[in-house]
Length: 384
Ligand SMILES: [Zn+2]
Image 1 (cartoon, rainbow, N blue to C red):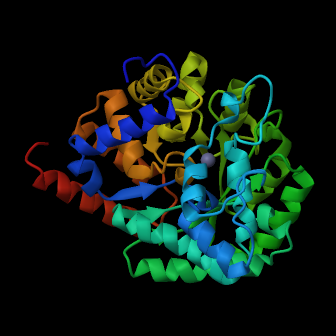
Image 2 (cartoon, rainbow, N blue to C red):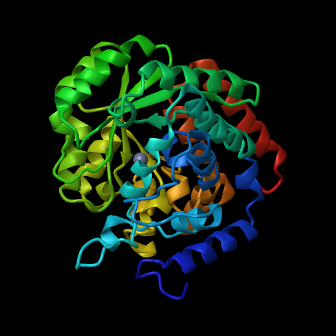
């Protein structure tokens, strides 16, 4: 990694992973964590995709389907070669370049039964437990499943069983249901009404998928109704996309009358002083997933914006997004990358982890117990 002014190559990102885990990683690995930005469909490992393909007797398709996947090893390689749409050559898509959204959505077809959704969630919860994640609010995209004829009850009941099982591993959770912003506001409203009966499992409503020309304001009606019904609200403001500052402004100030309760990503707010002060004054929190940005932005530009937001006193928490399609960089790697980018000490990293506890939508007793655990760990650690 000689130059930070260019986007890192896949090889450089692998090197970075090795470097991060072999350097002073013990505290970050050990600290109790809260994960507030992880797409459950973005945790479908090659191994689980392969297993589900066999379970259903279907081809282990990846991306557009033009890549012929004949072994688990080939599937793993395909995962490792996913690019961001920003990296598409100007000549346009080719059969051999699979973009993030193509990779992500091609995984949906393997999720067909309650057991599949249980396995997907449980696979993540087990990993979360191993990373000392105590509480998480995973996103899920029901429209990507119900649109294929999957019953919402199979999704939710599979998730519910996994949540109960995960409690035994010390991982508590609540779901954030996202609307696909590249589908219509009417479709979002239909999905919302159908899912309301699962309010005991769903703490928040979010907005994800392809943001190009799809501002959050399009979904004002369903967000307003969701707030009236007692849900917490958040929306993605992806990094480096067209109109990002306008989208962040809507999430901060105008959607659902007063703006939403959290911002997912929103790193570009750092470019605009007025936005920074509005976010700080509203006390809005941002979920930042630095590894997700490495394919779109330079290391230097991510690090500078991250430091700007933290220095401005904005509540930032670190999360992982869709780790299997992003070099398998789970929350621990995102925290380690943040530490390196910000030049932060373990004590400063602790504040970011505490932010994630505070900005979560967990019950007060859950938050208090995780906070106590972090405090005890800080006391124990002589270096802090
Ligand atoms: Zn996301």
